[in-house]
Length: 121
Image (tube, rainbow, N blue to C red; front, side):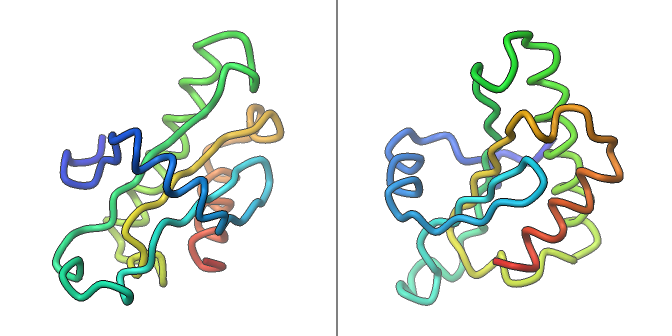
């Protein structure tokens, strides 16, 4: 579980990030990036907030959706622990969205997908 300071919960922040339309897709996971920290100097001290979303359209069973969210969240947490987040820390907010293509992937595959997304951003 991520610490509270790293979680994105505000609905208006979600809307702003989706409207920004800066996204990358790979292997059933999409990464939406929020506003760059370089634009505002006051936000340099704030940590990057992250959200993990898997919609009901992905799979009707909550168990499958929650498993995919747990895999993506744990992959991000381990990469954060190893300081291998790349340029993703230049953004104020990130949203990882799971799709049906990632439902049957193993933890190692999901971790590799998340790593590639973070390096490409």
